[in-house]
Amino acid sequence: MGLGSAELVTLAEARALAAEARRHVAAGRDPIEERERARRAAAAPPPATFEAAACALVAAKAAGWRNAKHARQWLATLERHAFPLIGNKPVADIGTDDVLRVLRPIWSRIPETASRLRQRIEAVLDDAAVRGWRPAGVANPARWRGHLAATLPPPKRVKPVRHHLALPSQDVPAFMAALAERDGIAARAVAFTILTAIRSGAVRLMRWREVDMEARVWTVPAAHMKARRAHRVPLADAAMAILTAMQPHARGPESLVFPGGRAGRPLSDMALSMLVRGMACDGLPEGAPPR
Image (cartoon, rainbow, N blue to C red; front, side, top):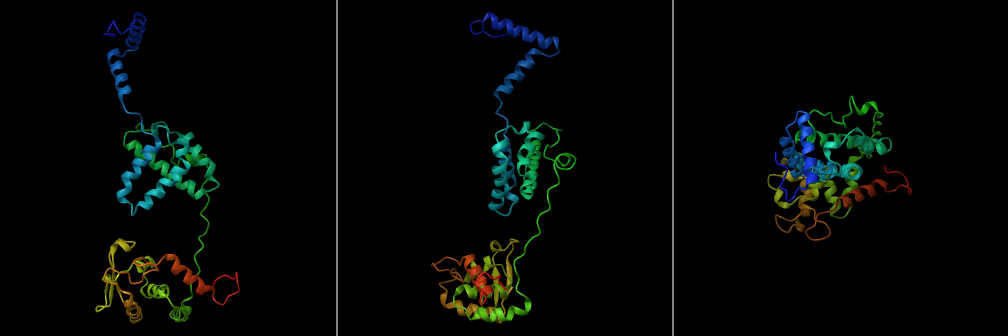
């Protein structure tokens, strides 16, 4: 086994290298194989950090998510709470203490976010194990059942959802009559939304090419539907009357049916919301809850 050129390795260094090689032999290891293993480790890229592993998982899952917003939300929780503490640590070295260091400061204060954060840390570490970035067979330190459940209290129950106030069905005819007396495109858009039972976003983005006035059908494009499938909406007489009233505003098949204040821009969602909020408070004392 050579120890290197005499021009580069001093006598003291050669004695030290020889002593190390003899220790490997005494321990039953091949000193040449050990030296090659050390060379490969030195030439290997640095281990993946937790932050790099999280970004890799998000990139891998992006194709299965509905939009980029979901990916940003998924990563935002980690960016805020996990990356400052363990983002630069090799993902192979993440242990229970690291996970608890991230979770404990927020576990009782914002339990819903903390529970979601734990699940995402667990997913990152599971994916890292699949990629070979974590040792095989090592338990995931972010696992809840049989692990963190033994040291952290159960996440608090999510507070009951407060639904928006709903208009009683018997009051709908009076509301529609009051809406008909309102001027403006926003009022027509709200009435059309109610008559077609379609999300307001699809109504605001509706274009004339989507409407078959003769067949009395509106075909909502897949891109404007939550299920990402085109949807055909039959148009009742009242809905057709609104479209007929809006036709003078048409500037071709690509123009918006309910245009906003600026040419070519759709109505804002706030324009519809403020109209409905104002109608819900009409005739009430200042500060009184909407009817």
